[in-house]
Amino acid sequence: MKYVSKSVLESAHIAKNFLDNLKPQPRATVVALSGDLGSGKTTFAQAVGKILGVAENMHSPTFVIEKIYDINFKNFRRLIHIDAYRLESESELLHLGWQDLTKESENLILIEWPENVQEIIPKDAKIIRFKFIDETTREISYD
Image (tube, rainbow, N blue to C red; front, side, top):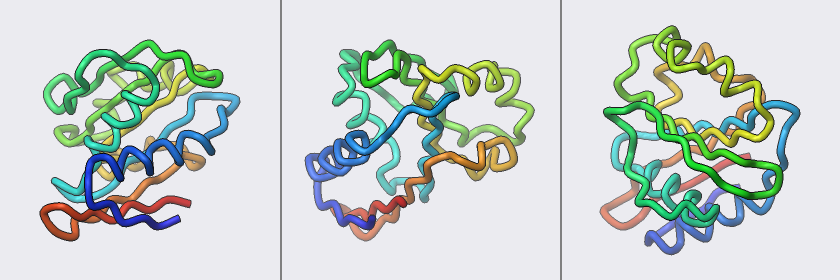
C-alpha cells in the first residue's frame, strides 16, 4: 500500500489503517520504520501510540534509545519504541535486551533507523517506508 500524507492527521489515519490490519505473531511483532531524517517516522510512531492509548507525549527516544509503554490492543500489552539512529552495531541493541524483547508475543516493537541494525531485524518484520516530499507532504508505504 502506498499513501500520500499532507498532514499529521492524515498520517494518523494511515497509522490506524496499518494497526487495524496488524495481527499478533507467535513472538514480538517488529515494525521497521525506514526513511530519511524528517520523513515522518516519529510522527507515525506518535500516532500509533496515541491510537493505542499511550497517555504521555511520545518523543523520539534518540538519546535514551528505547521507551516502553503499557498498552492493551489486540493481544499486545507493550509498545516498545526504539530509535537506532545513534547505534553503530547490532551488538548495542543486544545490550538493551533485544533478544528478550523479541521473544514476547505481547510486544509491539517500532524501530526507527532499522538500517543501522539491519542484521538483527527479524526477516518477518513489517517494513514501513517514509519519503519526504516537501514541508507538508510525505509518502508512506508498506506491504
